[in-house]
Image 1: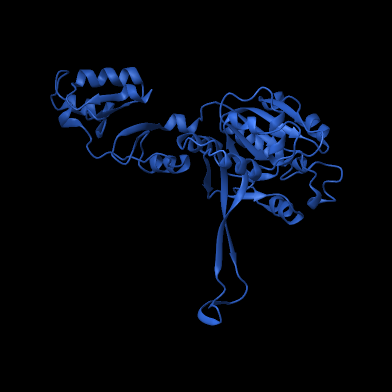
Image 2: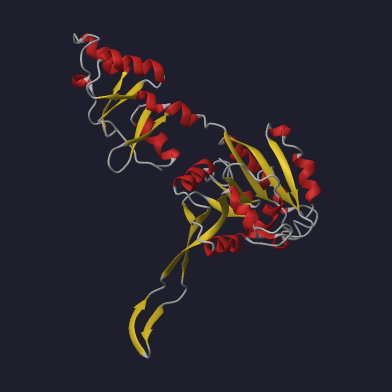
Length: 350
């Protein structure tokens, strides 16, 4: 749709108005023959030009806004919204490193995410042994945080971002999950189930999918609470043309002691309680449908193993660095932390 708003620099006011009316986006993007952004033009700019004495056959050259606010690709939705709100604008051009126009952010579209055809698969079959006795008679994804099951938080967040097709992999006390969520109609979504006859790991249950999804699909562990934007993760995956994408979280750990740096028996330096930084698997992924052909039906497979198999086949696997709040509810302390979060805290749900 945004391409309908492109006009050449030598366009007339009449042509610019026609483009405004056709696109309905209330802005035109003035570009060179190479589609390099030269400026923008709004309905207000045109009206001000007419008041100055321009007519329909006048060139738009004298009323082009030559230094509009622009953003690069992949800028996060929340940041884009903040920029638009701070500058009181409803359209924000997206340009690449050479200033070529590659998109246009529209306030109304950002405020109401479009529906996603992509499926979200939620791994909810784990036995939650580290959370016993809480999980003796309740599957971990149904443990409540703020009077609502963890799994419901995940589903509602994805739904708010335009996702409506869900698949839940169940094993341990799976009937309780099915009884609670049913076919998803109470949430105005669609839910199907993958039934594991034995524990298949964080990826193995995907081999039970039949038919395969027709588009890249999300996979998340059923005990991960996060403010990640699933749509942006999908877009990142597609932009980089990967076979599989893993969301990763930066983890910092401070050594409790001073560290002596040595070379053989020689001391070459000291570090006082250094901080070690690494990226950890956040339990959220995007996979291409053809990845499923690697999996053997009914065979156990963890997600890191699946990524290793893809690398062995020279298929591209990438990471999506997260900065959003994230919590893996795997231990009693994690569950307590989630339950103690105040209602304004970003985790588990805004």
